[in-house]
Amino acid sequence: MQNARGGAFCAEHEQLFGDKCRIWNCTRIKVPNTQACQHHQPEWRKYKLDHSRSTVNGVRRMLQRPDETNPWQPGLCRTVQPHDNDEDVEIPRNNYFGPGRFYCVETITEPCGVVIAWTKFDKSESPTNILNWLQSVYSTEESRLNYIFIDKACRVLRTSIVNKSWDTWKTTSHFIVDSYHYINHQTSDYLCCKWCNPAPLNGSAPNLVVLATNKQGQQSQHVIQKQRQKEKPHQIDIN
Image (tube, rainbow, N blue to C red; front, side, top):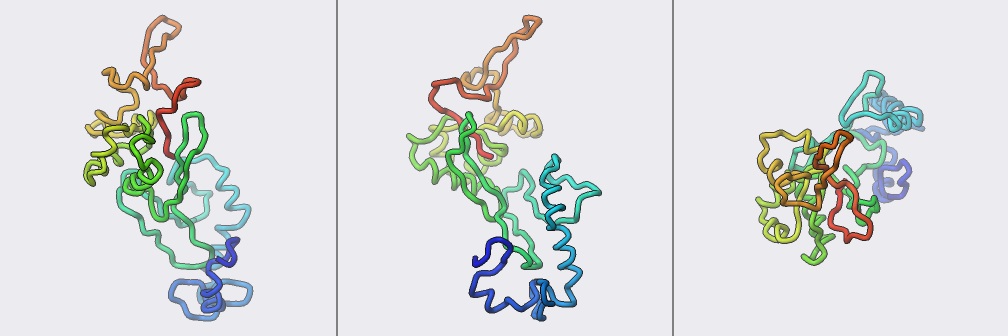
């Protein structure tokens, strides 16, 4: 792109459509100092309001749940992929007022917090995209880790079984759901409860569970969230 700080077109398309209205399929000439024709000025004003410095920065600083909307928020139009949706999401776009955006940035993080790999997903964070990326980062069995924590590990595991990639992953790795998402997943999901449990109590994953004693002397099992010092890395988190 010729101008990544606000421009929507490359140099070639800027010459072809630079004086045209930036609304999809509109061929009218845009009003000077705006990006829309006279007919689409309301859309341009709304875009300017929603993307103003005070509005955007203010919203980004707010602590809120994903997909949560509040009466005081502007009507920004975003397409968010449902957590358990495996399909790629086509992000609708009816204007070219600003540059296009990737759906998300995906990172692979060691337990200590160091990011060791990252990529951009164009349309969605689908299990297929995650599996393909893991395959590119860990192309050999020797490089693969024992435990891979993913918020949608059960969906990734199910997809891996269906497309047969699990035949190679099962000899080296376990796809585990983090404790927060495990609590919120349905108890009727047998695959998640059986194979993606971050703290299995049957002794199958002793590296993930330790005994802790409370003030009353009672023992309970806790998930290991951080790596022991000087221990060989054996798990990653994907965010």
